[in-house]
Length: 86
Image (cartoon, rainbow, N blue to C red):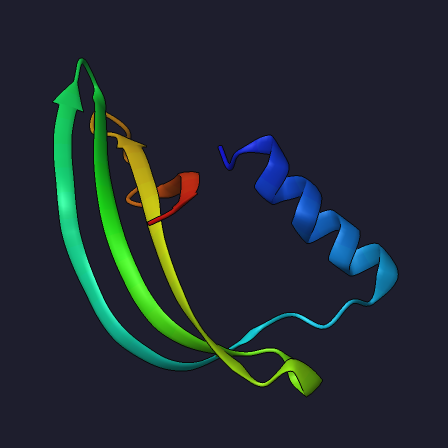
């Protein structure tokens, strides 16, 4: 499940029709951590990208996204569980 603050930001943007940053270029994606605890696999990926923010121009973004899934589940999808500034 996505963190509450991230989910709240998505919901706020949807309600106010706020512009969403647009991916211009993905500079890199690197797995920085992976582990298995009981039945839950977690993988953390560090992303570096350029984002366009309308009139504000282009900015660099560096974030760590953590994905997880139950390895015993037949569902192959990974879920975003955390987003942090990197």
